[in-house]
Image 1 (cartoon, rainbow, N blue to C red):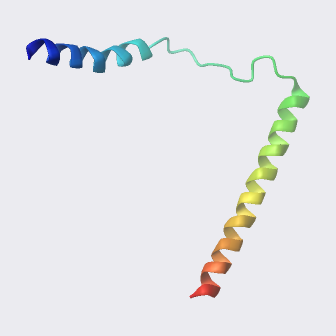
Image 2 (image 1 turned 180 degrees about the vertical axis):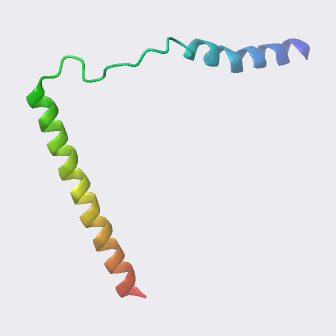
Length: 66
C-alpha cells in the first residue's frame, strides 16, 4: 500500500516539477511580419464584433420570448 501511495504522489508531483521552467517570457509572434500581425488584429476585431452582435441578438430574443 505504501508503494502505491508513493507512486501516486510521484505521478502527481512529476508534471508539476517538469512544468516549472525558466521565467523568461515567450514571443509567440516570433517571425510574423507587421502585415501578418495587422491582418490577425483585423480578423480578431471582426470576430469580436460578430460575437457582440450575436450576444445582442440572443439578448433581444430572450427578452421577446418571455
